Image (cartoon, rainbow, N blue to C red; front, side, top):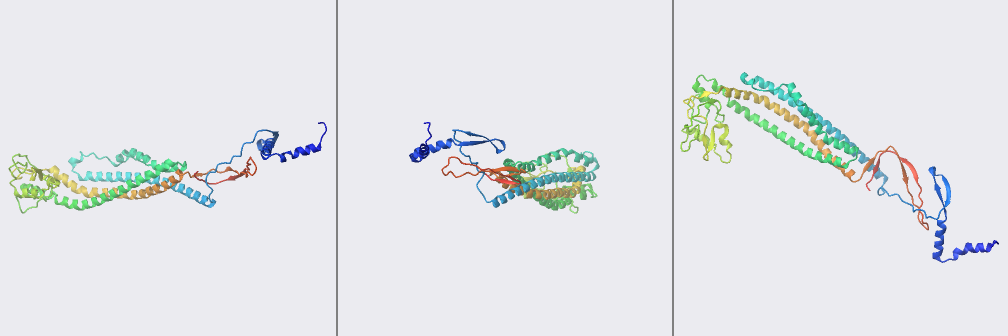
Length: 428
């Protein structure tokens, strides 16, 4: 109508209030769809004001990283994680340094002790035997094992590098390998120390018993006798019927290695013959005293007896060494005298090497146990989802959703700020 009627306008304005409930809600939704929306460009400045009939997308709430925790507790956990990373890093460096020191010291000590032993052997052994011995000098020994030393050091860096790069890259697999390998190394190091200590005790006891035995079997006392037959009877030892009573004899526990006798297969004392026992009753009694089916070593020790026909019977020397034209074996006599002089020289060197091995292995046990414990703790943290973010600074945005009392759209207000330092990322 061309005429403008205020009453009609007033009635139209009041019309929605009188509509039924469902139609009233539809009318409100239609009005909301016709509301203007503000489109923003760069710098959050309004550019255009347009009308649209499309419903805006619902507000999105950013997913939370973890449950809300006490900031003090989060800070304490973060400090603890940083401390664990620092400890594992320092531990890996200490393990690498100790491995290098261990291998270098053991190599240098071994070369020095072996070269010293070779030098003393050259001075002790007879001149005719000295030329047959091939013993390199110290420079040759040192240069000959450098390649092996370098390879051993490189291989020993595997475990420390697992720990270092596991911390640097926050890699749970490398940290797990670091902890597991340290556990194996700890067991191996403990066994090494136990074996070395056992060897030290064995060498000490052996030295205590070996030197008196060597002195009792020293053939020089027999070689110095005036008569040849007395020398033969002396070297034949006890445990048999001696031909001379008033002269020294080697002990019955000494080896029968100082005489050269022609073989006589018809002599039952040299070769056991079934049905024909050895005429020397003292030799038969001596071998019978060593008979033990469960410990045959007692019978065959030092070549005086042998186990045959379920019995320990004499063997080796003839019934009468003097009558059988036995002679002194000069080479065996000189070799045994050299052994007597070498044992006091070699035994301390073995003790030195074992002692150095124990001293260097004890710190390795401590570091390996620490690597097992600390590595497993850090592995558990990293494997559970904890991480340390060491960015110098980054932008954060917090999302706050408005209550939906009578509204279909949630509004978000970004709050911007800067966070610097180390942040503990909690597991999801």
